[in-house]
Amino acid sequence: MRPAGSTATRAQRPRNVADSGCRADLSSLRRISYGGAPVSKELIHEALDRLGCDMQQRYGLTEAGGQVTILTPQDHRDLLAGQDAIQSSCGRETPMAEIRIVGEDGEEPPRGQAGEIVIKAESQAS
Image (cartoon, rainbow, N blue to C red; front, side):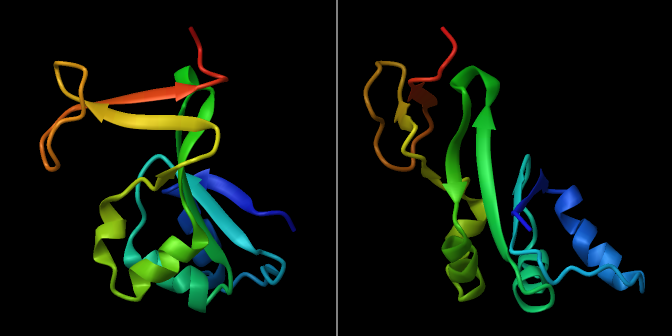
């Protein structure tokens, strides 16, 4: 089975199916790919341990031509290993996008200061 894609809310469905007592065969499920919102550490733990599949978060927007960042299955395993900063991340930029943060002057602000997210992608709407 190819990886399943879903919103964060729907990413809980395989767990709910398993909890319901339904005899659905989830053994071919390899990865749950989700977006729209983060998922809890609990759900990630269950996916890896109970369902035996990886989790992958994708972030994108139509104006940028689709996916621009990704939290990989390894990032999810690192989160469970105690790297909690990953939980507030939307991941690293994909090879299809260039992302940077800029201040009002168009330059990168000092670390920790707010700025605007600027995305450049070949597939970006103009």
